[in-house]
Image (tube, rainbow, N blue to C red; front, top):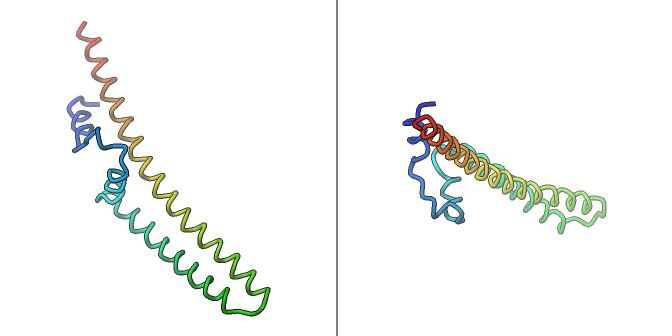
Length: 119
């Protein structure tokens, strides 16, 4: 791989001091390249939230025990779906930072190989 290309990939507006902050992670998730994932996560989260609200209201509105059990089970499934969307978005953020670290390591290995060739 070309050294200039690797340096350019590693430099793309990156600030090392802010990488671990929650604000940086949110900014990373809502960037242009992650827009499709963010839209998908929010769409499913809204669907799961509406389903949880609906089944929660229906749980208290019914008198039959069988229906209450069904609505309670559906409510739990919808709430777990919201949690899964949060876990999915966290995984996408982690995936991007791992890719960035691998690019940095590739750059350092290329620099080390260049210094070894020079000696």
